[in-house]
Length: 286
Image (cartoon, rainbow, N blue to C red; front, side):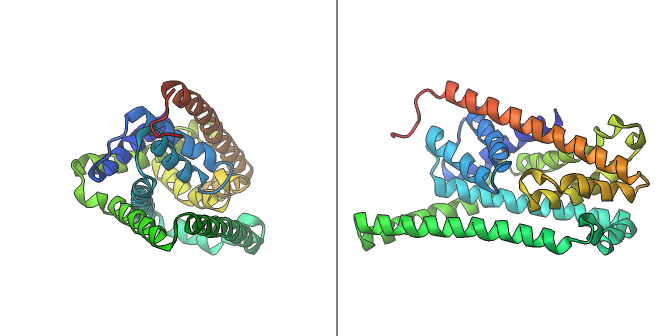
């Protein structure tokens, strides 16, 4: 339920960012696009971000360049949020966090290099595919319309992207934007905290422990889609810093990972169905 609330809030926050660009998409299409973003990110890194912008372009006539610009702003705000959590944790729990970084090799059984190489390889593949698609697209457009029209097209897209980036400066409801930004991350921490009573050994863990778990497990999600394979390991190591047995820590991490990703799968599938039902005629001509 907390995860669902965070997505409701994220959808509204995105609408606030899009408003200064001259577009105010319908709430439910925006919400479904956010749900689909997390769904597709489970299968391929960052595919969900492209998908949610494509959904609004199809059903709400929001240009891709503008929506991508606002999406970048969102990610910057999220980065500032997670770094703020990390800074607060360093003040409150610096001894434990320093211990975490000093012993991070244990997360992969001495194979941190392998984990890093794996993440780097995925990143290289993603950038390689995107670069190839861009080259093919540019060559096709140049052949069809010529260099001058291609240049004009590029200028228009860059202008729209810049407008999306600058949307945060022209927010009509800045306090509502701040509220949603804080609320989203409180929900994320709460998702871990309300899960602690699932096991007897973790039921007495504190809200600060949930903050530490969220902060550290965020790196697992960066390493692999949905944190598959890494999330339980990171959770295990964090919880051992708070006196939880390693086996119990891994078990809890597995339960939390399964619950979150199951909800993402179910929510994504339902959103795919509902958005098709509620939008029988796409806003843009095929």
